[in-house]
Image (tube, rainbow, N blue to C red; front, side, top):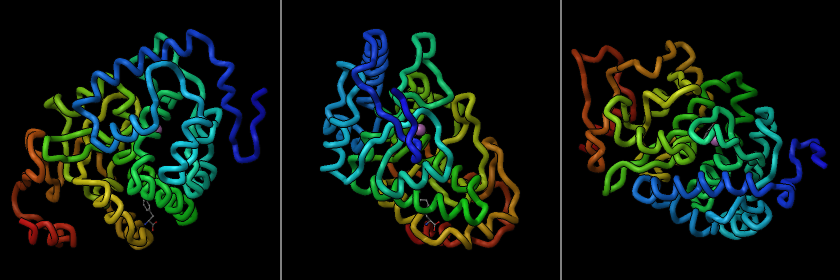
Length: 296
Ligand code: PHE
Ligand code: CO
């Protein structure tokens, strides 16, 4: 039966899925497949085909883990739902991705607040086939235990939210999706790229750590990276002094505008960043801004 082990893992019990559960997976998979071919980033689509996750039904985690393990050393472990933060971080640090097993109901096809097997497997796992992203996720797990100890979990959680869950990436062909929360949502995978309402800002570690997020609706704000190497490099410095620096600054709402914001222009081309500065900036220039000036 579903005995929960001390590390919160369970058996997936693949044999136990019903025909209806596999049918719901197929519905979700086929719909996303159509939407994502021109919207997901290349790394995601490559991971998906490398894993052979297909429309035939909910995959067996053991089969996926074997492929994933050969590619980047990651495995999938089954969990009953959200696990405690420290347990989650410990799994990531050991290159184990905790995935839920249950699939949403037919009346929940369009939006679900908690993760299900479709979100975890089709949203997260394909990117773990990418070596740089795989390293980022492990580093995040290690950073998670550290943030817990320092009392700054909330700031680190915002980084996860605005990258792993809702990140966008600028490519030569235009904006693409890498955030798993978007990749597993039919509505948001269109909205995040094509709707004029949400803002799309240049990735900025400190700004992200200061920005609240909402979990009950499409995002009003996305952050855009140039590539996974940039994400890895920007997050590799010691966060302890950064947490202290940010702790004295006010939190920002997703709708807030601040002077250092760089907007992605119209979602068309790479490195098309525009500042919308209203009046002179009062704050001292941060290192990132100086670096960006040099790159102009
Ligand atoms: N560099 C971070 C720290 O020192 C750890 C981390 C890496 C966090 C990557 C998130 C992502 O705490
Ligand atoms: Co997720």
